[in-house]
Length: 411
Image 1 (cartoon, helix red, strand yellow):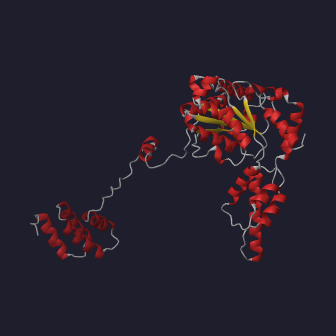
Image 2: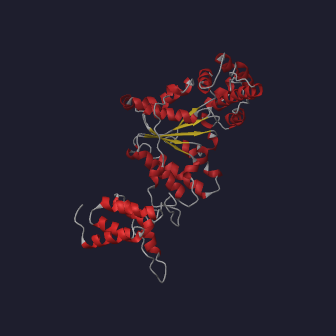
Image 3: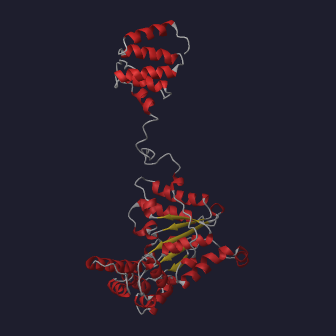
């Protein structure tokens, strides 16, 4: 044992005379700890805890002697004339997380962040036109009007084929226009930026036009990039029928951006748009050099229907399903309708299993019954389109629609 100092010797004598005196023993343990004699301090603290198991000072001294982190001693509160809010904010600033993740908005509705970075640019991955079942006519039109000139720059130069302008996909809802746009982006190896009216419109004056500009600025930075304008009839409605000046300004801004498609700044930016009602789109948007290429996307043909049905049944328990028969009786149904047929058939099998208590597979009977229940969602669209094809086909704009309606004997 190291030589004790006179004070430690005196305390040892006193503790031996009064072994139950906890404060005296803790004072001795504190001096031993300060003299780097931790083992002896632990022994004294342990004896103190035997006499006073709940003593906080003994526990703290024991922890320090054993090498545990020393908690900071509480500071007595200081009397102040008033509460120092600034000092309190600095004290807890690193401990309290921010309440909101959004940047505060200025009085004019704009924020200080770089708005163009807020647009989500997607990678279409491995989606290609080959993944679009059937629709060979649509693929051929896409290839001739859009893809072939891009893939063959030397031939494009030889024949003077211009890349100016965008592509407009139109047709009844639920027929895969968005999926086709993604497939085009995949064919080009380009990023994909999808934009709808909710992404652009803003309640503050001038912000909608700013948002539209930032969409194209983002696409320019991410080039090659496909900008997909979904529901173009909402983003680019006819200005003559628009009573709100804000919407007219949005259309004007979109026209300005489209006019720069063939400029050096827009190199690698490709514009695709989709709408169910092209006759409600402002005519200026369809002028040559803008969205001048138009492709009609109709309900899926036989091969496409088979691919869609196979896709939606791939993870469901089925048996003895003849896709050939299903394909024949589902003519005229859109892709969304076919997905609903598979959903209804699954529900029928599920409810039957619940009632009988025996799990069974989805059979042909379920699918046929579901196909008979589902009403083609495209019929109302064709009813409206027929009037347009008959009385508003100026310049042969809807000749492909007229051809289809005559083939289906709907005209």
